[in-house]
Length: 260
Image (cartoon, rainbow, N blue to C red):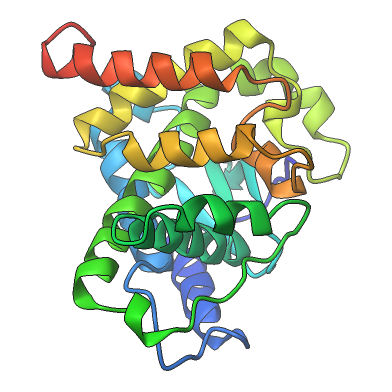
């Protein structure tokens, strides 16, 4: 859904504060990766882009909305008569990625946990709570933070690329219907491939490895009933084996100086 709204850093700060005020987020266990971390990831991605790409984006490329439904939408913003572009992320999406990253971290010490957790997410919008104390050790939560950064980083980087690669502009008419339409539903396979490659360069330049994102993509690919939030992450007709092979190749090429 594309909206023209007034935006400023104060709006970003207000929505971050709102995240912590929402019911359901108070717990004896709290994730260290929150809206502020996601904002910092977005800033790092922005800073690592070439100036010709940064000029098409808002200097604060991530903004938050209070919806608990997991959503990631491209937003055209009118700020002091200047049109800038941001990614609108719901607090529900941050919560979802925190839980998925946690499940992946637990899998490091309890093999098979991640697969079972992702299977429980099929067809659902909300992530099951992880409450057992043995899953909240410092070691597991440190791993969780790393996976959160990878998943959030790659998702945001790919979405940002849709602006500077011209894909958002091409599909803007269809995104102006007023519905929360994931741009992934409109992209051609070629457009998606270009976005993944550009997002890979951006993510890897920020030291965000692909392990977490590839694990999530693989899990989505195994779902027989995909939840609605999956469309905000990958197109419906994605060849997941090919996608993960591409990402692994991009990461290898990057560390050998062959990806730029």
